[in-house]
Image (cartoon, rainbow, N blue to C red; front, top):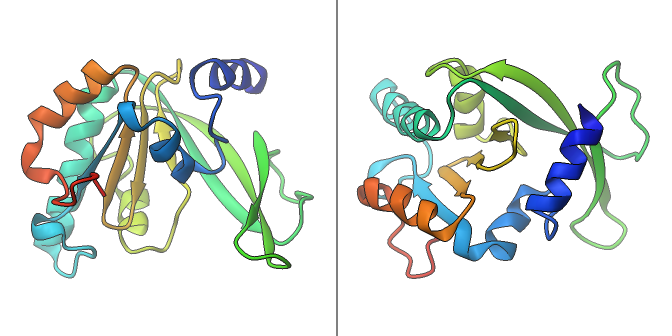
Length: 180
C-alpha cells in the first residue's frame, strides 16, 4: 500500500510533501478551496450547536467527495527522525520552524470506509486545536481534505471540480480576497 500511494502522490501532488499539508494551498492554488467551519469565520466552537455546525459542514463536504474507502493520514510530531512506535509511518519530513528548533512529522495511514459522522471524534479534536496534520483522501488521491481549527482546505483534481464544490458552499467561504 505504501509504495502505491507514494507513486500516486508523486504523480498527483509532487510539489508538496504529504506530511506538510499546509504546502498544498500555495503549491496548488488553482485546485484549492477553503471553507470556514462556523458562521462569521468564528475560529473555535464553544457550544454544542457550534460543534454540530462545524462537524456538519465537514461531513457535508466529505460526503460529496468520498463514497467507499478512504485513507486517513495522521501526523505524529517528534524531536527525532527515528520512529519508535509500533506502526511504521508512511512518510517522515523535517519541519523547520526556526533554525535549531526542528521537529519531525511522521505520517501514518489508516484505511476506513467513509460514512458521515465516522470521523467526528477526530474532527472535534482538530476543531479544538488538539490535533493537527490530518488529511483524508480517496484511494486514488484525487481529492484531499485537510481539516484545521477553523475550517477545512480541500484540494480538487481540477479547477473546474474545485469551482463546482466552492459554488455549492459559497456561504462557508472566507471573506479574505485570497481565500484565507
